[in-house]
Length: 95
Ligand code: SF4
Image 1 (cartoon, rainbow, N blue to C red):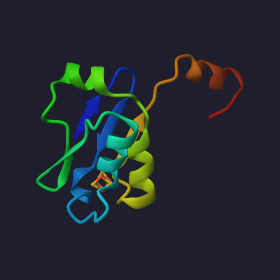
Image 2: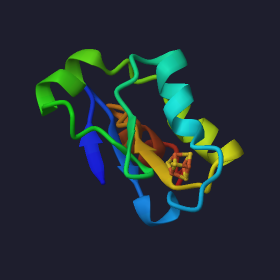
Image 3: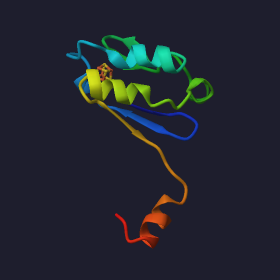
Image 4: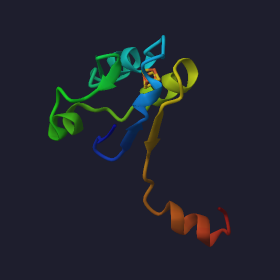
């Protein structure tokens, strides 16, 4: 599953979720965002919101990714684009 907030893109490999005991992403989303991730049939879902609602409600806090890595099954990856980073890295011969 994937969805977008204002500037970030969230990817969740939901095949890792059914046997996740903590479901830590859900609680993290309630605490640090506005609870946009909800559990549906044992996996996190945003299907109760339309794409514009997700962008309006999302706080881009990254808490779900952190909690999933720490207490879940490492199923979440978030892309955070940083304008100018590629040019900066190339200019300094960094990867
Ligand atoms: S914490 Fe990670 S593995 Fe567990 S339900 Fe959430 S996304 Fe899936």
